[in-house]
Image (cartoon, rainbow, N blue to C red; front, side):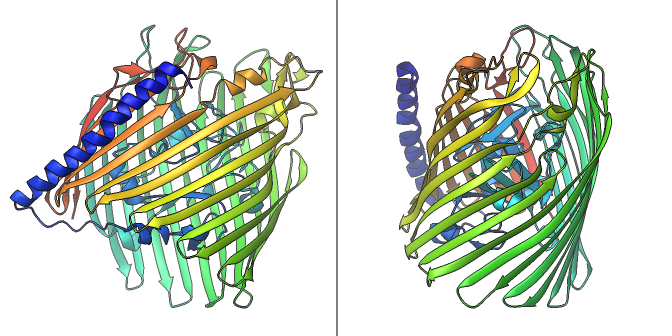
Length: 639
């Protein structure tokens, strides 16, 4: 930890918490002196938050307090009060998740290291639909413009999730779950504008087509300004348009059907030294249908199918991809102390690639790949309501590495209702991407002979509701990586190995009935090495020095009165020497006023502590831009 940076952060913290406390005292006193309008916003106590149910950890609903994995849930209220404008910004609140802005429209998001624009060890789902791109095993975050008001929660599983979710869930799973249509009835109009978020708007309407049916439609659009570039002409402005629908039908007491879909298009511009300025097209759509049948109180079946179409175009490469995915799942309880989940699935993805980067091509230019999966996981109570053992694995057959097994074993001990100890051992894999396997340079297949990357992960954690007003969750992990990809004088090889280790901490303190403080802290140490035969272009030190050793977020949520809210988020991130990114601290503030219960007016200020700063990319030769200080106003009306 750099000494000067540490001292600066201590000084900032020394001001942040006392000032928040003073604001709390003054505004609560002020609240007693005035009359305020009634406002019914649901506030969960810490006991209620501990009992929030999650799905992603075990593919069944269970209390977050007892989950035997490093699980964190961002609720819709967390997202609303953070005043963020995108999903990556919201993920900054989660311990273990690294989020950095590459430029005004691109993001680097990962869990437990290996962060980059092309981060490839993270699986991201939206309502069960995978949004990672098989071309490079990463996520185009600029295309994932979900209506934030329609998100029910974001479940983040830190650590391998391959036993249930398959390849590429190496370091974690992010599952974005939207609201049931019955929870979005009526109208919503949201508009806003600012210095960086130039203009944005959302319109949504929900209704009941029938007694047991609920539906909604929506449309949204936004335009974002460029970032700051010391070399001038950043050319990374963005605009995106999106629309969609959701229909939910509860057909009797046993069956539930959901159909939803989205269409989007837009441009995310960029400028770099190789291709100059260009406007990159993003467009596509998806259709999801899922059916669930409850056979009994202890057994249910589900079937989901989705189709996804995406198109991505830039000067060097254009991609068109169609994905078809079918999955069956069976959950059942065998007696009082045994819960089993198993399933089968098949995915087919078809692409067409147009490459304009001689002498480099991708062959074949068209490809169809199929993946067959089967998974099973069983949770047994060794001691009823106290000690649980979970065993599971997923089998996957794919076109790049043939057969893969991803087992895990987990143990959870809950000595009482307020705390849980847990430990796990897991194996997860990342299969080669389409680009790695099929890129050809000067007639040479660069990735010929590459194999699967894999990790053995060891975790231990403890979460506890220490008092009715204070909760914490701490996890320690050690990951052993093998066969990591290296670039060896124009060829891809698997010659890097190593380990990472770290600690992740989340706390929540309800200081008063109207003031809450949250902390998310992460420490990460990476120790990588290459085999003796390696002449890697990218050295282990390059990867290690591109990830921060530590980063933390402190969030203050204060209800000044029943119709006035003040929120503050302080973030501090260690330096990235390899990317010439110094340690930085950022402060975001938000003030929300409800003149009437259904109308919310927001004034938000972001990155207040400096006029601009880099977070990820090297700022040289026009590559990448810096994040700027920004302000925006928003009005949101429900009717």
